[in-house]
Image (tube, rainbow, N blue to C red; front, side):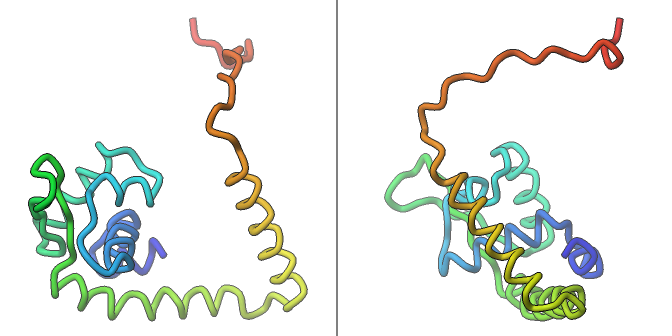
Length: 140
């Protein structure tokens, strides 16, 4: 995906942001875009600044809450996505074509199992123990 994005002058994160916003079917709060991408709001701001400078997104005031900013794609972004997403699908198809059906199914089953395990982690997980830096990695 990153290679396809670069061929169109975008970063991988920018492509993902455009796909997330388009997939929502309408403007999204910027914080929701970052949450769906699992990136910090600071990183998201940088991605959106670049996309806005390039004419791919527009920021809008949220009519129900003036403190929030909504983000939507522009027709220029739609045109780029219409070119890029078929390329992404083609690259994935080429990458997977030599993998047999049983192996692919096992892979997808494993992804589903991992996804379910992650979703099942409770919100109140106790804090992790402090890391003990291995001696060979410790800087003095």
